Length: 152
Image (cartoon, rainbow, N blue to C red; front, side):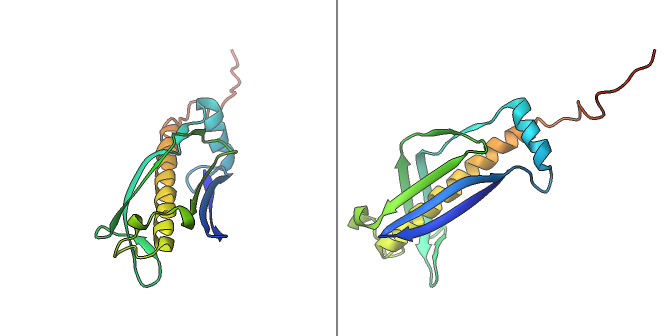
Protein backbone atom coordinates (compact mmCIF):
# COMPACT_ATOMS: atom_id res chain seq x y z
CA UNK A 1 0.00 0.00 0.00
CA UNK A 2 1.33 3.43 -0.86
CA UNK A 3 0.54 6.66 0.93
CA UNK A 4 1.12 10.34 0.22
CA UNK A 5 2.40 12.64 2.95
CA UNK A 6 1.75 16.34 2.41
CA UNK A 7 3.19 19.04 4.66
CA UNK A 8 2.06 22.66 4.53
CA UNK A 9 2.35 25.93 6.40
CA UNK A 10 -0.49 28.36 5.90
CA UNK A 11 -1.44 31.38 8.02
CA UNK A 12 0.68 30.19 10.94
CA UNK A 13 -0.74 26.67 10.89
CA UNK A 14 1.59 23.73 10.26
CA UNK A 15 -0.13 20.67 8.86
CA UNK A 16 0.71 17.13 7.89
CA UNK A 17 -1.78 15.12 5.86
CA UNK A 18 -1.39 11.39 5.17
CA UNK A 19 -3.63 9.75 2.58
CA UNK A 20 -3.87 6.48 0.66
CA UNK A 21 -2.32 6.72 -2.81
CA UNK A 22 -2.55 3.23 -4.30
CA UNK A 23 -2.36 -0.48 -3.61
CA UNK A 24 0.77 -2.50 -4.37
CA UNK A 25 4.46 -2.46 -3.49
CA UNK A 26 7.71 -3.97 -4.64
CA UNK A 27 6.64 -7.30 -3.16
CA UNK A 28 2.98 -7.48 -4.29
CA UNK A 29 0.99 -6.14 -7.22
CA UNK A 30 -1.81 -3.66 -6.75
CA UNK A 31 -4.39 -6.26 -7.79
CA UNK A 32 -2.99 -8.91 -5.43
CA UNK A 33 -2.90 -6.52 -2.50
CA UNK A 34 -6.42 -5.21 -3.13
CA UNK A 35 -7.68 -8.80 -3.28
CA UNK A 36 -5.81 -9.66 -0.08
CA UNK A 37 -7.58 -6.83 1.76
CA UNK A 38 -10.93 -7.84 0.26
CA UNK A 39 -10.35 -11.44 1.43
CA UNK A 40 -9.16 -10.68 4.96
CA UNK A 41 -10.63 -7.26 5.68
CA UNK A 42 -9.21 -3.80 6.01
CA UNK A 43 -7.32 -3.16 9.24
CA UNK A 44 -8.11 -0.28 11.54
CA UNK A 45 -5.61 2.01 13.26
CA UNK A 46 -5.96 4.67 15.90
CA UNK A 47 -4.66 8.01 14.59
CA UNK A 48 -4.98 9.45 18.09
CA UNK A 49 -3.80 8.54 21.52
CA UNK A 50 -0.35 9.21 22.99
CA UNK A 51 2.60 10.15 20.77
CA UNK A 52 6.10 10.57 22.20
CA UNK A 53 9.44 11.40 20.62
CA UNK A 54 12.67 13.30 21.09
CA UNK A 55 13.55 16.11 18.66
CA UNK A 56 15.98 18.96 18.20
CA UNK A 57 16.62 21.80 15.78
CA UNK A 58 19.84 21.40 13.80
CA UNK A 59 21.21 23.99 11.37
CA UNK A 60 18.67 23.14 8.66
CA UNK A 61 15.66 21.38 10.12
CA UNK A 62 13.99 19.74 13.07
CA UNK A 63 15.14 16.14 13.40
CA UNK A 64 14.42 13.20 15.65
CA UNK A 65 17.40 12.96 17.96
CA UNK A 66 18.08 10.87 21.09
CA UNK A 67 19.63 13.89 22.80
CA UNK A 68 16.85 16.31 21.90
CA UNK A 69 13.84 17.63 23.77
CA UNK A 70 10.95 15.37 24.65
CA UNK A 71 7.83 16.05 22.57
CA UNK A 72 4.49 14.59 23.57
CA UNK A 73 1.09 14.72 21.90
CA UNK A 74 -2.11 13.34 23.34
CA UNK A 75 -4.80 13.34 20.67
CA UNK A 76 -8.37 12.15 20.94
CA UNK A 77 -8.68 8.53 19.89
CA UNK A 78 -9.82 8.23 16.29
CA UNK A 79 -10.15 4.74 14.79
CA UNK A 80 -9.75 4.81 11.01
CA UNK A 81 -10.03 1.90 8.57
CA UNK A 82 -7.02 1.57 6.28
CA UNK A 83 -8.83 1.59 2.94
CA UNK A 84 -8.43 3.47 -0.33
CA UNK A 85 -10.17 6.37 1.47
CA UNK A 86 -7.69 6.52 4.37
CA UNK A 87 -6.78 10.00 5.59
CA UNK A 88 -5.12 11.30 8.75
CA UNK A 89 -4.25 14.91 9.50
CA UNK A 90 -2.68 17.00 12.23
CA UNK A 91 -2.90 20.81 12.39
CA UNK A 92 -0.61 22.77 14.72
CA UNK A 93 -1.43 26.46 15.17
CA UNK A 94 1.60 28.54 16.19
CA UNK A 95 -0.66 30.84 18.25
CA UNK A 96 -1.77 27.91 20.41
CA UNK A 97 1.70 26.63 21.28
CA UNK A 98 2.45 27.46 24.89
CA UNK A 99 5.72 29.25 25.71
CA UNK A 100 6.66 26.41 28.06
CA UNK A 101 6.99 24.09 25.03
CA UNK A 102 10.01 26.08 23.83
CA UNK A 103 13.34 24.59 24.94
CA UNK A 104 17.01 25.23 24.13
CA UNK A 105 16.86 22.35 21.59
CA UNK A 106 13.51 23.48 20.12
CA UNK A 107 14.04 27.23 20.48
CA UNK A 108 11.01 28.57 18.58
CA UNK A 109 7.32 27.90 18.26
CA UNK A 110 8.03 26.98 14.62
CA UNK A 111 10.47 24.25 15.67
CA UNK A 112 7.96 22.92 18.21
CA UNK A 113 5.25 22.85 15.51
CA UNK A 114 7.57 20.99 13.14
CA UNK A 115 8.48 18.46 15.84
CA UNK A 116 4.82 17.78 16.61
CA UNK A 117 4.03 17.26 12.93
CA UNK A 118 7.04 14.97 12.45
CA UNK A 119 6.03 12.98 15.53
CA UNK A 120 2.47 12.52 14.25
CA UNK A 121 3.75 11.56 10.78
CA UNK A 122 6.23 9.00 12.11
CA UNK A 123 3.77 7.42 14.52
CA UNK A 124 0.91 7.13 12.00
CA UNK A 125 3.25 5.59 9.40
CA UNK A 126 4.52 3.10 12.04
CA UNK A 127 0.94 2.16 12.93
CA UNK A 128 0.05 1.78 9.24
CA UNK A 129 3.07 -0.48 8.65
CA UNK A 130 2.13 -2.76 11.55
CA UNK A 131 -1.54 -3.01 10.54
CA UNK A 132 -0.76 -3.68 6.88
CA UNK A 133 1.90 -6.27 7.72
CA UNK A 134 -0.65 -8.28 9.72
CA UNK A 135 -2.80 -8.58 6.59
CA UNK A 136 0.16 -9.26 4.27
CA UNK A 137 1.26 -12.14 6.51
CA UNK A 138 -2.03 -13.86 5.65
CA UNK A 139 -1.01 -14.07 1.99
CA UNK A 140 -1.21 -17.63 0.78
CA UNK A 141 -0.93 -19.60 -2.43
CA UNK A 142 -4.19 -21.41 -1.69
CA UNK A 143 -5.99 -20.01 -4.77
CA UNK A 144 -3.03 -20.16 -7.16
CA UNK A 145 -3.81 -22.13 -10.32
CA UNK A 146 -7.55 -22.25 -9.65
CA UNK A 147 -10.11 -22.82 -10.96
CA UNK A 148 -8.72 -26.15 -12.11
CA UNK A 149 -10.45 -28.54 -14.48
CA UNK A 150 -10.55 -32.15 -13.38
CA UNK A 151 -11.33 -34.91 -15.86
CA UNK A 152 -12.58 -38.16 -14.35
